[in-house]
Amino acid sequence: MKYIFVTGGVVSSLGKGLTAASLGTLLEARRLRVVLQKFDPYLNVDPGTMSPFQHGEVYVLNDGAETDLDLGHYERFTNCLLTRNNNLTSGQVYESVILKERRGDYLGKTVQVIPHVTDMIKDRIRQVSDESKYDVVITEIGGTTGDIEGLPFLEAIRQFILEVGPENVLNMHVTLVPYIKAAHELKTKPTQQSVAKLREIGLQPQVLICRTEKPLDQDVRRKLSMFCSVSEKAVIEEGDVEHTIYEVPLTLHAEGLDQLVCDLLHLETPAPELADWRKFVERVISPRRRIEVAVVGKYMEVRDAYKSIYESLTHAAASEDCGIDLKLVDAESLERGDDAQLRDVAGVLIPGGFGLRGAEGKIHAAGYAREHKIPYLGLCLGMQVATIEFARNVCGIENANSTEFDKNTPEPVISLLEEQRGVRNKGASMRLGTWPTKVVQGTLAEKIYGGTEVTERHRHRYEFNMKYRDGMNAQGFVISGTSPDGTLAELIELRDHPYFVGCQYHPEFQSKPNKPHPLFKGFIQACLARQTSRATPVRVDQESPHRALQRELVPQ
Ligand code: GLN
Image 1: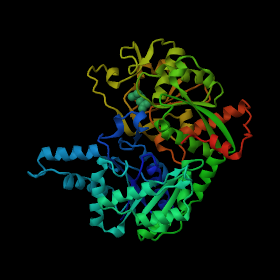
Image 2: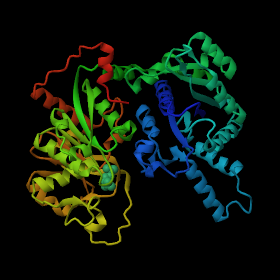
Image 3: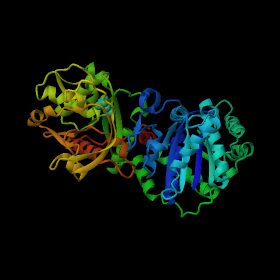
Image 4: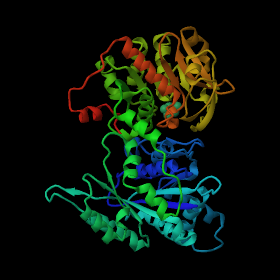
């Protein structure tokens, strides 16, 4: 078993997660079995309660773990399927150490960061190191070298190297090499200092991944090599990608990273097979046609808040040789009647969400898509608002609402199961992780999925109230998928609409570059069909090809 630790230097937001994931792509392309893991030094037990403003989207795993969005990169860039063991926070470490202490497991000893906290961290690395399943474990340490919270993790790595032998471990440091305009120069000092900080803790990186705006010339490479004690060919340049994050593995491959890593870890592998990946990237960069899709949500200015959704759209669109122009619509602006934003789009997507803010705007958007026969994809809350809209405006249930938005609504078409059963003590917790769905035969959903049994990831509390099922069905609202026992609605669609689909779950967590999710693929196909039928000419950009390419991509 080989171990790669990825640390970050100088500043945050260098795309360490993407770099780790991309290394995973490259090693898998060399037929190695790879698993990734993230250690987050913050004290939250999990990111489930953090605001998307703060931390981007919460990524949900099969087992229901609510994790950092980097785990989304890991699953999208590699074939590994992660569990809660693959995301460890300081909060979890301290929680379990303290619980052990209270149980008396430490037998009267003084409980300390070294060895008790560091032991716990090392255990977690071992927990994912299953030799029968993997050849390489890539562990990313969140935060930046020098953060107080990160110290126990780095110390644990130092001890771990001692235990498994340095020949089995590689430390990769992702760092910033800033360009100072006034001096026309790339500066190596921040990296030197960051590496010095690592060495102080007893860690020597063998590979430097240099995030930079300008190419590293030979001089800079030599300097970094000399001051940081890293061989010159292990100074790897990682510039900003021009078009899409999916270029990162290709950039790193061009710099020789995968060969270098295999050499350093004494891994013999065939040359990497990157043809499919390249093809996908080409389709993302220069699609034959493009469509505009409106995403109506609450966190439009935070690009990371709906990360997996934007990625899923990219995957599905690429599979149709199509580019996406995203129209990010703030739901609250629709409450002020600004409908023009939805007028010319090829499709409307409403993501998941929590709370009242923007809810009426989303309900309005769902109604607009229904009435104008615009393809609609509602994810989780997006399904719930579509349900409320249909109940109100088609079925005449004027006060229809979710008890999430109005606790005392007389018409709770969406509510907590406990409320539906008349239980007063709510005690509701979220339905999380993978649950099976039985797709109803003869529905659009069956056609899209090409089958009747699917499993999808959930993260929600509220449910469709089955009391309304028959009445709404009579008006054209179809429950096209349920839990296997038939009690929970999982999928909805409208009979008289080309593509109006809502799901109670989050398909965006299972889409991959060369495996787009059927609901997204169906959505894009419907958007394309609408565009063609309305004979909207494909825009021919008069600008330079470079700018034209950039604009048609989903923002990353
Ligand atoms: N707030 C809704 C619920 O809890 C939807 C959640 C979501 O979209 N993830 O059921």
